[in-house]
Length: 570
View 1 (cartoon, rainbow, N blue to C red):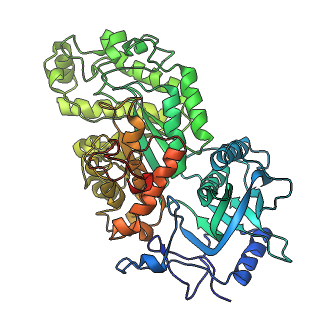
View 2 (cartoon, rainbow, N blue to C red):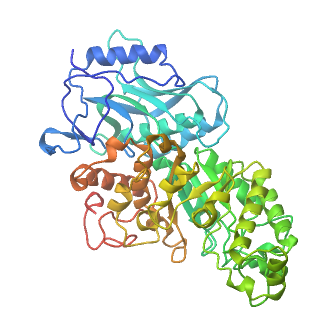
View 3 (cartoon, helix red, strand yellow):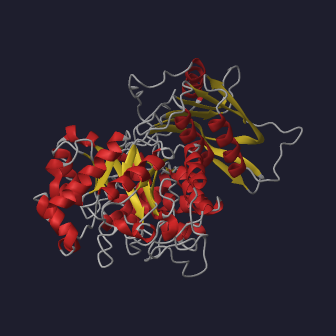
């Protein structure tokens, strides 16, 4: 019997097995079911051509003796064989466990079935298929979606062996959100063969055991600089689920426009570009619900005290003066009453446990040049820098009182980090270096280094997105857990409905693998040989699923192809 068990890999290339060992499951993980154990036994007993990854980081890669695995992002542990399975176009779902009535899983199965099969495909009356049922076992019916929810899953996929009671496809997960991640991986293993006009799974049997490296895997979407219709936001969320990103950071409001309805202060959205470029409360609820069904959190942002000029269009008293429209007036209690009401209204919409309060790029000069604000500063013995700190801390307390963990851009830490609320999550953006300092002080951190993870920087190639390491500079391993993860940012000064998807994709997917897959899988030297073909394949998969992902190899992102050719070569 040759080895065909679970492995830990160090690149996407596979080599013949020499030895194997089972990974130790953490105590909180779901125990493997009887069905899974039987299936794994059959896999080990019957597979004579198992494959495992054993290439080290500094190895030479030989494509003529290796087989590429076209999964994105790469799973944590997997093994496979060399057989081909047929999948029935009438594939059914057998949802088991305490969550057997979960509409989240049932609806996801229908979505993925539509992606996998051609609309005209139906099983023939005499056809026999290796996989006709997808068995999904979920051990918890708790569908609460909060940061750190268990997204692990185990996937078994193989033909039923003679004399065996198991076979086909099995996904096991502790939560429905782990089941969603397993469904995505299953869908990527299913490939339509145009010669046989059937869906097939190559290199079976598969055994995959997977979980994310980081809990926070985000994408910022800016709808203030350019309004994005609800259907476009949903398309972005859908594409995020294909890459296993799990946080939509919705930068709804900024200086340029205020498109969101706030019932407590209904004049605020007078600052929308037009009445047609707005989000009603019902729209926001719809987006949050849509995202939850795909295992994606929505973290809203209200950036204060800077980036808030639009607020004064409906309520001019929020401006220090007509000549000083930003930052918001720190001297008036009315300012904080409005902030409190905005956050209270938004708390009803956004259940995610974190709320972004911005706090970046605050130019306080005009506070000093506005008579009543300067008088207030003198009365409170504050400099403008002190007033900036006062504003941020007061806004943080409002969020905390609403049971939110405050997130702030890194300038707040750089200017008065020692006084930030200990719950603060510091959001890096200016460059490398702040997260090591923040975690050293005990703060949690999110990485979004603009030099490598800003999608509006069109001259940043996919390779930089892929090779950026969130834990860089953090030498104390005890502090690694304080880095929640990372986020790519789609600022929309030059992006709208016409080009936002091809600006985001596929580069955001490069960061998504960095945030999901183990470090050993992504720390490779020769990207062109080990990653590029698989990345191009995934870009084509996005295109086939209706996502306008731009060519991978163009010098500038979102540009169209420079000439004729295959999607897989661009």
